[in-house]
Amino acid sequence: EIVLTQSPATLSLSPGKKATLSCRASQSVSSYLAWYQQKPGQAPRLLIYDASNRATGIPARFSGSGSGTDFTLTISSLEPEDFAVYYCQQGSNWALTFGGGTKVEIK
Amino acid sequence: EVQVVESGGGLVQPGGSLRLSCAGSGFTFSTYSMNWVRQAPGKGLEWVSYISTSSSTIYYADSVKGRFTISRDNAENSLYLQMNSLRDEDTAVYFCAKALRFKNYFDYWGQGTLVTVSS
Image 1 (tube, chains in turn orange, green):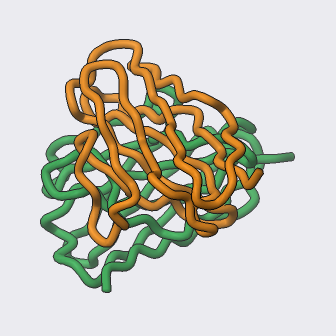
Image 2: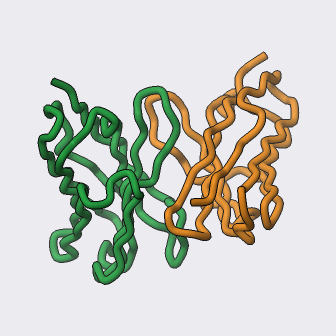
């Protein structure tokens, strides 16, 4: 099973700042990595797939990069609605696995 | 509008059984793979099971293999999860998730149904 490790666990930033979230895989997943956003009491929302492709309707301030074992989700300028928990997920191997999440909170 | 709606959750004793259902609408259900993903209270996401469009390919997480069975009825636009021999650690919100076409990612999720395993 591929283990995904996300860092930091919590990121405290002010609106308008840039957020950089990391996801590291225990073995190469090529570019088969996605990012999701989840707000309390809601289902996750797909943001990025195949490491760098924005899903339908996702604002351009969200971008993804990386390949192999190291991936990054960048939010260029935080909006109030962006404070949430973010998960990475690998789509390379069965079983599909998620990272433990990064909480982006208001500083 | 694409929608997936889960039902069937509830309180069950350890060792008991429960069947979850998921109704898809707003898309051609028979042409998309489907999944179940769960989230224990206050915890992260855990993929549970996958089923291909024709049910010919099925995968399970090791944590549920041999106890859970995924199935689908394309004529009814429905996905199911039969859960047997339930354990305390199966307590979670269970999400039905539509797969992005030809990809192992989830582009539409239901709101989830809560399964509580407790005596």
